[in-house]
Image 1: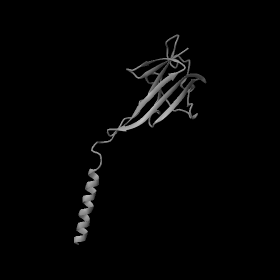
Image 2: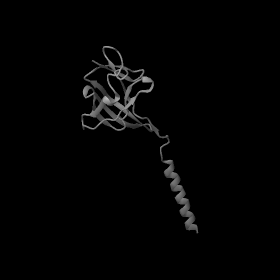
Image 3: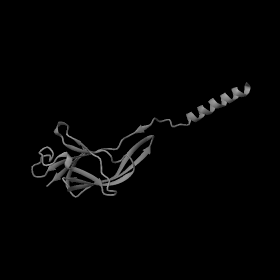
Image 4: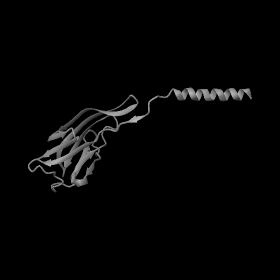
Amino acid sequence: MKRSVNFLILFFLSAFIFQSCESDCGECFTPPNSFHFVFIDKTSGENVFTNGIYKPSDIKMFNEFDSSNVEFNFIDENNSNIVEINTIGWKTERVNISVLLANKHIFNLYVDAERLFDNCCSYTQYNEIRIDSTEYEFSPDTALYKILIE
């Protein structure tokens, strides 16, 4: 009987010690930022989806490093017609996304993203973000890239 009591005491003491060794901070997860684009006719200043030049089905994206298709969302709420990429930065990666409209190359989006864990929090650090082969404007207030199309 004494042996089983000692075993129980030892068991609960061990469980308490191992439980108290866990981190004192709660888990924290910060998802990566999404990339948002509007495509603007350089001459008229109009969104090329709003004015009917292109349809959402005309959009194609692929990663030039491995030829894989890139998932994106087309947000047409309130006729905003924004293209959103939210698949970058969930892991450490480098991507070079080629964006086409009606099979015409519009631009490349290069991203070097590093997934980090610090102070009990995971987050994405973007080491480099680059848009090549087009003229564009970026608004830090809205985090929106305005791609100008000739």
